[in-house]
Amino acid sequence: MNFEVLTLFPDMIRQAAGTSVIGRAVKNGRIAVDPINIRDYSCSRHMRVDDYPYGGGAGMVMEPEPVFRAVTEAKRRVGEDTRVVYLTPQAEVLTQTKVEELAGEPSLILLCGHYEGIDERVLEETVTDYVSIGDYVLTGGELGALVLIDAVSRFVPGVLGNDESADFESLQDNLLEYPHYTRPEIWHGRAVPEVLLSGDHGKVEDWRHGQSLIRTKARRPDLLRKSRRIRTIWFGDPETEAAAAALTGKLTRCGTVENYNRKTLQKRRNSMSDRDLLILVEGRSGADDPDAAARFRNLSGNGTPFFLFLGGGADDRCTADCLQSKGFCFQGAVQMDLYPPSEEAVRSAALSIRKKLERGEL
Ligand code: 4G3
Image (tube, rainbow, N blue to C red):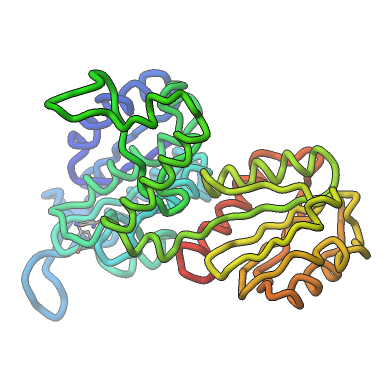
C-alpha cells in the first residue's frame, strides 16, 4: 500500500516512517511512505505557501494552488482515483472501522495542513475524506497522518508478524481488551488471576470477556452503548456455515453461530433482546424458504435488529416477513457469493454492519 503525504515538513514523515514496525514494513516493500513537500509547488519566487486570511483575523492560511499542484503530482504517482484524506480537527474522529475501510485501498493521499488550515476551495475540489485523530488541536496534520499510516498499515498483509496479527482486535466489537499477565506468577505480592493458570480454555475465554465488560463499563461506558451481542444463525450447506463463521468472526470475539438446519435447535426456546443483533445466513438450499415459519417457531425478538445474508439468489421475502412478525427489526439484506465466500465480500459485509453500529443506527 502507498501513502503519499503532502506536507511542509517531509523530514518529520521520513523520520517516523523509517522506525519500528512501519520502518520494517517500508524496508520489506509492504508499504511505501512518500512525502511530497508542498513548498516545492509554491507559485512565488520566495517559495511562500501561505497568506493572510480574507476577512481578517489571526494566523495564516495555506494557499490553494501549491496544495492543488502537490495533489496533482501525488495522483500522477499513484493513480487519478486515489482518495485524498485531509487531517483536521474539524472532522469525524478516526475509528478502527474507518481504519479498516481505508486499509482496503491500494493507495492513499494524506494532506497535512498548518497554520489555521488550508483555503477551503482546494479542499472542496480535491478532498474525499475529512479525518480527525481526536478532539484536540495540533501544530500540524503530520502527527495525524502518521497515526493514520500506523493504524492502517497493521491491516496490510505482511506488515505484522504472525504473533502480532491484526486478525481480531479489541475495539472491533466496541469492547476494551482484557488485562494481560506474564511471569512471574507473583510480583510485588500480587498474584496472577488463578483462572489463567487453570488450563481450562473455555473458562479463560469467559473470564476475559467478563473483564472486557467490566473494564469497558468503568473506562468507556460510551462504547458499551454501541456494543451488541451478536448471534448468527445459518441454514444451508457447509459453505454457508463457513461464511456465517467468517462474518461473525469479523464482528465479534464472543458471538454464537448456530445451525438452523437441525430440528433440535428449532425446538429450543430462543428469545433475543434489543441489545442483541441477529445475523441470518441463508445458503443455496434456503432459496425461497417456505418453511420459515416452522423453522423460526421458537425464535423471538424484542425489537432485535437483524441482517440477512443470502447466497445463490435465495429470496429474502418469506424469511424477513416471518422474522418481522416475531419481534425482529429488518436492517437490510445482502446478496452474497457464498460459494465460496470471498474474503473481500465477508470483510465489506462486516464493515457495513460495524459502521451502522458505530453511528448508533441499529
Ligand atoms: C487543519 C489535525 C489542520 C485545520 C490537524 C489545523 C489536530 C488534528 C490543522 C486546522 C491539526 C486532528 C493542523 N490538529 N485532531 N492541526 O486530527 O485548524
